[in-house]
Image (cartoon, one colour):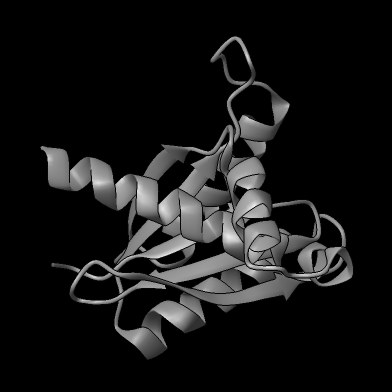
Length: 141
């Protein structure tokens, strides 16, 4: 199976996960950047793709409760377009991330992780959920 990087994009953090060749998803990091300084985040993702020899990106798409795309989705799609323009070797996919943060929080709480720690890694764990959902959907096809 091809390797993928999963991303949960916020306004000042980027949760990152990576899958291995078996399709197992691993948390990578919670990358912090200045508010709305997406260029720095994109450069970090491109560097990571090059270092890990990965060309597949799965970006969480924060659909609204009514399943429509709001302002946050526009921001994510703009990030994806800019990422592709900066490094055109990438294949970019979107995955509904509506409940990824809730699921990530529940997983961490079930593991006994303290709330202070959860706050620092929640985006990374959300990226894990996003990428796992995407890979599970691939396996169903």
